[in-house]
Length: 431
Ligand code: ADP
Image (tube, rainbow, N blue to C red):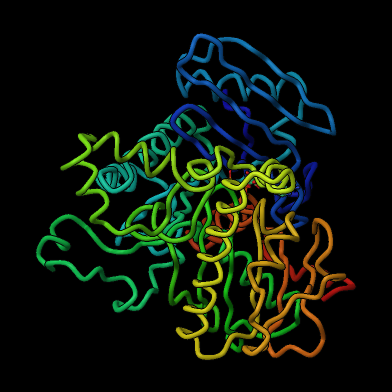
């Protein structure tokens, strides 16, 4: 029997129920049981090293983390282990009243501009997009299929990383190459991290108490992967990632923008294969390639100790970031808010301050006191005089997926959910 009950009002987490959010990668499954109304994670965890000799499952509930280290031969075994841990240490999924499973899917191509309830046809369409994201869509799909088998009584919803950027104008989405080649092979800019950019830009408007339609925003999602977006009145009009998540900003291990002729040169003259180039640009570049370190905490330690490679890596990273802010300023014409988010954006005051250095003539500045420290809540970090607000807003992709899953099943006519899935959060003292 499935551990998930049919929706019934008045259960442990209220009539709204909870959503199990699943992010299935090639050798890992991250999951979170989310209360979409209050926004808190009821439980969360990760299955790692799927298919290797020694796998692990880490499950956190009620402040306690339980770890199991057994081989996890495949995604099915991984998800079964997760369900067993829910049964063993809680929370009881039937009592948690799971009304939907929300799946993160990386590439929705030109097909998907919104989340959808999964059926066999949707599975086939996601599968057909695999050539555009060979490392991501197949494991995403495996996760969906396994979860549908193990949790057959609830609707499964897919939320695409690309969907928010379906609105990019053709001028921003089109690469200037032979249009027949581009059309035949789906070569265009799709953008990624869309769930985060959408969540953060929406949250900025709510925290400020302003209409989303009235504000122009630049969102800087700086994690291990990093991307920038320009959002005009809630509509994405530019983003830094392209056909794949490799384009744009300097990242932890990815190069971001690079002259495409470098790839030709390395294959023609340096004897690198296609796979070598893939490995170089995705895993041996960015901060890691320049400084041997991709965690900003370690990078700062290296810089402070006088490491010149680390210092240059940080300069390259910040230069690219500032260049994108300037470019998006020109795209938008007027910028009301610039927001930092994700692991680096939320936690690194040095990156935030230095990225926007020297932009005072554009009405952009960071106040050292307001900027200090890590930010767990939405915070304004610009001084009072600027025309552009600079903010830090923690992202929450799991919550965004949970809320989108609820909205999607409600629109599709499923019962037992609430009609208030996205209440305005309380503004903080800073905002
Ligand atoms: P992703 O989801 O892309 O893996 P995250 O958004 O979780 O990445 O960000 C991870 C990165 O955040 C780390 O690699 C590290 O560089 C940075 N980070 C995390 N905590 C801190 C901190 N306290 N100070 C500076 N950087 C931090």
